Length: 142
Image (cartoon, rainbow, N blue to C red; front, side, top):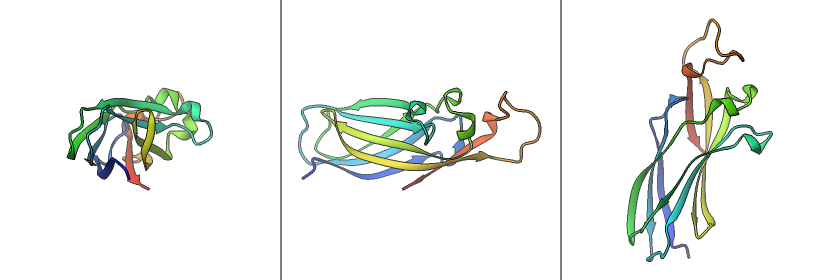
């Protein structure tokens, strides 16, 4: 039997501009007193082809955790576009939110994210042609 059950996870500010922080409202139930903190992590998958482009956007410790229903907002910085291959900026990628207890991961929630332009783009962008300030990401759970 699990000591912690995630009851709900909601993506806030969705859709949002690519450079905005990612925010997740997490509700979980703790069934028994925990001796250690829970470690929550947000990972942005920069490329399906190579995990070296993955970015850990935030890692936080939550504790002490009281028995009962708990809720908090996990906010992580936006991914650094300079570490993402230009061919992987637009289109679908993944954001993972994980939780570990005593270095054992027991929850992994994934969101498909479709990065696309908010409006039709005409003109020049960055060196690779990407206009990061006009990108919007839309996380969808899977």
